[in-house]
Length: 458
Image 1 (cartoon, rainbow, N blue to C red):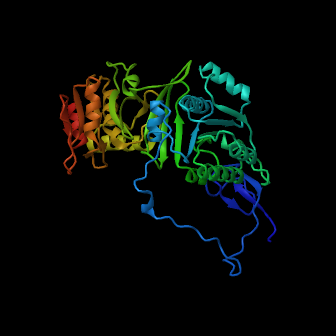
Image 2: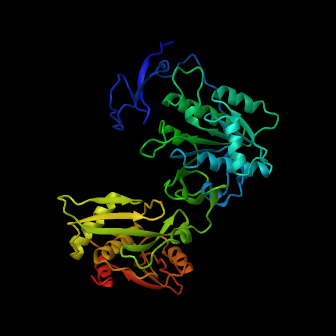
């Protein structure tokens, strides 16, 4: 058997190198490379003297119409993001900034499940049992029949789950970075430990049809810490987002094998814990000032949910050689593109101005349908004139200045009409027979961004 050797592994991306360096060549992060014990070398090729075990193949048609019986928490926003509840045998990874509310959300979820007769186990590697009980008492969940444990040894956790009198259906691991396997010569949280611990727990959970939820730490860039393979091992990856200055929290699914991706759930942080928000559009627009210049309402689409948010822009003359461009909640590069298109195609000069853009409410919008709303907010801020308060904007802007259609415009228009908007400045319907809306809302379809400037009187 080959002798175990030392290797150097990046704790951010998992890249392996033969020597230590201050900077990782794969992810360009500094001071993330640590020495770990490498596994014994595996012989090349398969030995002819040792035969493998015969695998029993199962016919795809044998199961008939497969139907997953999900564990529904009755927390509408959580069930929406997971695709209708937790699938037995699935593995879910939830990440977020420290103190954002990951443990609170999962504690509320397992307490709700246990009250409906689903056996649940909450294993914490960061808190003592009394600390979890204190949080549950503060949230009014102290009467929930959830089994608690404070442990970090994966071997002990697996044996305890296997030997439990009542087999759990849901298992919480808080967090995966605190777990370790005793026969691996590396510290908890390292790439080898995180990957191996997750593999062992998932293997046990799938063999016993247990839904397991991992809490994952994040790096300074907002990515889940540890090897990227961790996100490939699990069935569902959730990010819990939010600004600590706002009471809103966004649960976003970036991967889901049993439901839609990019689905979001909106919560509000209150004294009694995380309260689900059934109508987030109304909440995001509740503090909007209708007579403020540089404010435009955008109809976005997050997963299957239409969402109306306020786009705020401030344009001020700059004395700097390189004017500032500050963006919160949107893509910085896309703002630079919109500014360039307005200058080149519409003759609107913004090069000598500082530009500040914000998506109100602490939410982050990634889809290009925000282009028209951003352009309208910039023009309004430059003119220092407020946009019509009953108008909503959405559409994608190309480099030639053309306004391109976006997906599911009818859903966006229905949501706008439900919240009392009378007019919509949108892109023209697509060539495949898309409907542009059939309600009472008046639609102004754009084919070029120059038409937007004409509508706003520039």
